[in-house]
Image (cartoon, rainbow, N blue to C red; front, top):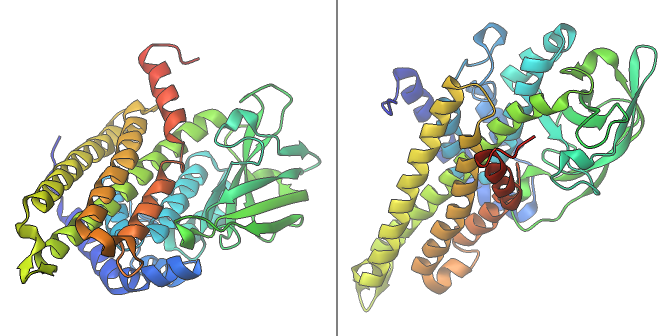
Length: 381
């Protein structure tokens, strides 16, 4: 594959980098501290045409490929991981409507999502299901022209802030993944309310929240994909989400590396920069080598996603590797910073908290290992 960026990718990279440095990075610590949704940053990205990056130009999108998505996500994450998670989730839900939505639904929402005038979210996790879609219990009963949805979702990114929720529900009586469907539910739908907002360890600006459905009425044309056949759609959406999580991990790791190099050059002990110590040099060298390996794998996987039909096993391997390695890289960066890195005066502790959440989002590491192992040994049903 060719790792040389196209002129369009270079322009995108510079645009996102400028927004990240000017608008996102200065607000990141406050967003984390106050658990504030990064709406200002999202609006800046929307004005630049970035929120619709993966959607077709015909509806106002950027027509970007997976490599462009990775480039943009990494730059956003370097400045603010919460904003990056909102961006990735929006892209995942928008993709679901693009590939599975009926024409009325596409005409109503895709132009708004492409321009960033509306934010989309993805709602699958439930109190009794965790990350296992086969355990989903929220139900949707079909009536004359609409579905009635009952149940709840938890830990939903952009909860209470999104305009549209792509929601996984059980429309059939089949066990496990059989009978699962996906509905696009408007934030103003009758019977949809917001439950508790989670206080989390990291990624605090992503507005994780409970959704409650009580006889929620959803038009039948809001069905995304075929009824009872959510899993193929979910695999495609999950692949983009996993790639996005890997790119966020890469961005956080790159930010930790850059901060550690700057600290090693600027922190003086006995009037000498600590970067002169071999121990610090070792740490920074190991960080840099790992970040390069992460970037090579994520870049390769972005290429695979655009050239090979799903399921993309390589995407899940990249997500597993990048999110786990991010913790190692940032931990070493903390060590470079010493006691200062353990304070909130420096961003390393926020990087670490944000990175820890990525081992849970879009598939916990252990579930990914199980899925990858089954695929490799031919045991996947």
